[in-house]
Image (cartoon, rainbow, N blue to C red):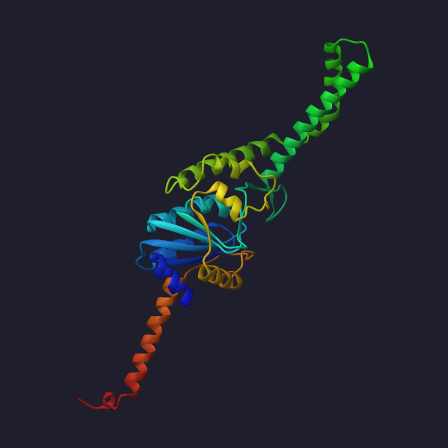
Length: 295
């Protein structure tokens, strides 16, 4: 707990730890932690998550910024997807040697599956591959037909077009336009939330939001501290005491939990101090012989 007190004193801040999925339940726990005492000027949040609900990430970031002037977020290990969205609302990022961010990925529910989701990046990557393969196939057909015969370029192009359509149309027929609409809507939501959260301290670099939403090939893509400096303005390595506390907290509650675990560590320390003082006073009162004297 000495580490918590050091960091709380260093930043004149309340120190929080959030581990697990980003969810509405997590938002409610954060709100309760903020309401149960008089907040200090700033907040330090140790965050470990594989992602979750973008709406909840937005509410959590707003809850911290409503109660605190500045928000410093520490990344001891993984902070993915909706966790990355939450980071946009921070004043500064402190990333440990083993810390990593991820793309601001859109998670979509799979049809006919319970508690299953797919990545919006997977869908966008598939479309990108199909587009490239379609163009490549048309070009190959056109060149082969033109070189191998004496027909005009226009006729060769018409034949190449029919061949390409015949090969790829069955594949495109399996694409659900409703799914594409859902992906596009989710991407717009991510952009809108990101722009609003960046309005606090403008910690995103130009075009960083676009890169976070659409610039990475997979949900699990690793964005380490070096690359995070290309996306965010205020990023630094963790100090030894910050690194140590982050590792202790991570081992205590890891991000693969089913439900979020949220704690205001500063309040917990103060409660323990008050409890110890109360017990000490009771002990002194019991040991004092004058306490049993009649008036």
